Picture 1: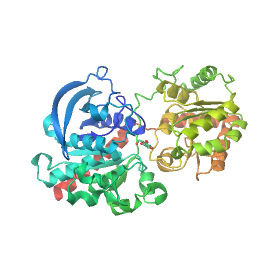
Picture 2 (picture 1 turned 90 degrees about the horizontal axis):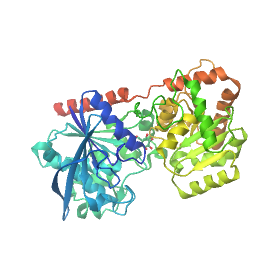
Picture 3 (picture 1 turned 135 degrees about the vertical axis):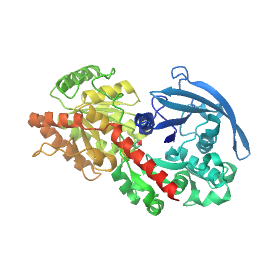
Length: 480
Ligand code: GLC
């Protein structure tokens, strides 16, 4: 079987968030199952062509409405996976990878190119797996080509993976034929609430849809979580499946990680505290192994529950903790966190930046990892935190519910602490319960660390579920 992933980002080439991590690791895991899995990405100016050995293959032209657009094709191989890159400097040599005024056009071009170059690179996948709104249109373009009986595409099926339903690619309907080059017959599939909605087009036309945890797949049936998409998802729900993400065990490994001060494993976890002492020194906090350190590595947005932390920050600190937050995002959260830091300089660091080295140091140093997301499709940080022995405290939604088992003081099972409603005081109480164990029940705390570090978030199991989904599609295709 052959699979093609089409996505807007993939680690290590280019990454702004969880999508990049997943596209950087799931194809590798599928390849390990002996599935020929390849990836197509845009060639952004930020991608280092030399470092990753990108070779120019050829160029073709892609028609988009009245435009005939240059499309260079580069390729490279990394960890056994073949990656293709679509080059068009006008679209992708920009400061940002998202958030440009012409994102609609940039990603329409990319989505169309990703399908149309396939005969030119001589790759004929059984399944194309698009990811999020940026590449949802590739499913529509594939459907159109199949409709026109192009033999090359006739046996290809499609999957849309939804990593975050909040972002849907909504644009003005006028763009449909002028910009997206979509014929009338397909307009209805793309229109939703009087807009063009690219994600909706993908949802409607894909053979299967999956999202990144089972609980999130269920939550998407409700308006609270679905950002308006529950109506279409209810109609298409027989195609919808939840498969929880994994993490790359080679990349996130406290025993090998070069970014942290001291390496440690599940058996040498007592070394972990040395990382806390070093980070306390580096951040100019009081250096003391007994002070619990709480960490957050996060986008500073409403979705991540930053408002809950700000609401009860003083109470959290008054329980004797130190708090380190690393990330960027909405300006008002950046400012409020900086103000908190100014007020409680002895106990708070607001590191308003994106820094992979520092993030490893935080996972390794912290006793507790706080993730009070309002909604969370899967979440990778809690998985990384557990692997580094930082005990997660999470709101019980989406992937957080599926991956963090609340600690049970009687049976000594579980890997973290959870709260059940999106409320600052419920979160505070969960932090208190967690600190009670940390301060007064060291045996349980050590058991918790061992449980968390032993939690299996390897890709293997989930990669097999993707495979089952792909095989299922093939079977139904065959019957029809
Ligand atoms: C998005 C989601 C996150 C998920 C990631 C990868 O960033 O917000 O929950 O883990 O995509 O699927």
